[in-house]
Image (cartoon, rainbow, N blue to C red; front, top):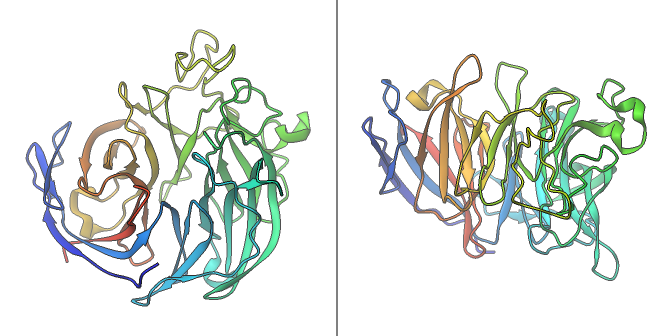
Length: 381
């Protein structure tokens, strides 16, 4: 991996029917707000990567992983350094590998972070997807604290999930994929096709909705998902939002409700012509707050943008797109209705993750397979 190399682009977003970002004019599906969109400066802070999956921070120290395996740290303007840690053998195939990562809410003092990984057996065949807890003992070394969750289903690597986010100081939520097995999303004893909830110490909250059913059902917060790629906490509110891949249609953004069924059930077999929210089979299935229709754009990680410097983008939900190759910005009303959307940051290819750093800047990762990067976006520089 080469030393950090930066490339700076200055772009101005327009309050007309289009937005100019990184030199590319991109469409706006609905009019932008009257408040001015920000001028933005985009700088590549890390280059030469291959599918960086997630990014998080312990204080001012950035951590990121790559799907093929490994975690790196970066402090200030210094180049990235690989973190020495006793990882299991990573099953890097299809969509599987090193995936979601998140720092503990108190990481600035306790130095804890969490990873979600597709794990291989000794012979290289798929074992499962696992969530591990780590403690950083220096900028370039981490030790394993414990395994929090094991047994999340894994097959070819397709539909492996896996996004990690906290909603409170102790409660960790885990978005999983269905591992391309049709019965997993509706089976409460499978950890696939679910949003799971566990405490940061690995204990299972007795207030989880299916705790009394025992077994894996104790972890389940809600179910009926295809492949959860994003979990986003809304600042100042208790809400958690999820982002999910559809088949040939209907990527979804959902509110994360306790105990709800989100209606994905591609049985018999793995029939992807079934609707993402199958109201015929499950009349009480929870409907999406937004769906892409056809074709999909492969929505992925997201964040809520905060700070007055962001102008009309302040408070919007930003969601990365892989197939759509950009970032979608969504306006959400107080009643949690998505009222407008616009697409920005075209020209970088597939985007896996967008996150807001402790410095208030936005960061996004590309997912093109080679010469990928991590980019920093500042408003009104």
